[in-house]
Length: 221
Image 1 (cartoon, one colour):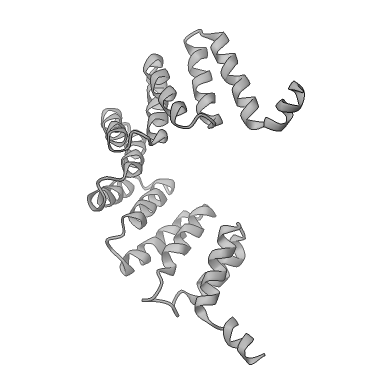
Image 2 (spheres, rainbow, N blue to C red):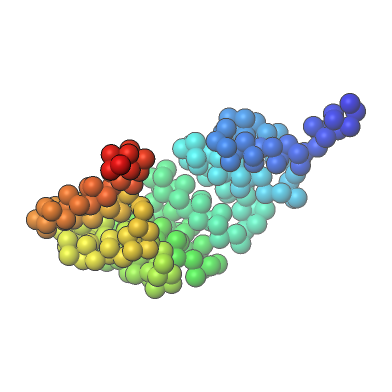
């Protein structure tokens, strides 16, 4: 009995319980466990970073910013935390701070394609379209297999009414991730804009198969 009590009071046990709860989506209980051990484990575990992730998922971006900034005091050279802080600023409509922060992440890890993609979306929000496109192409050069960068390029070209360019980029994304229903939806919209109605319908059919594979297989039997 005493041993069970000691185990339950072990802050590392509480921490890993909090992480387990977070991973299964029980954010409320995970929050309690992580807050309980944050100060106790200071210097041993960067619990603030985990709390930042948790509050980001809860869409409490002000809290996420608070804890990511605290996490950077523990490790100021962690590009992942800087990226997450930048995304929190972006969601909190603090665009200039978001751009400043994501650029720091890129300085620390210039070979992470996702960071350039995130910077591109922030620049686009500010209306800096050409700079946005440059960053997206950097992302595709660094990691040609990063499908999201091609999809985001497609969306930008779609907004610019450059539908042929949009078609080319989303096809690259689909080639990399053929079962992504969102990508097929983008291509369907592009085909519609180009007047390719049969192709648009084909993509819609593909989406239905991807969303409800069991029902479609039953119908074909």
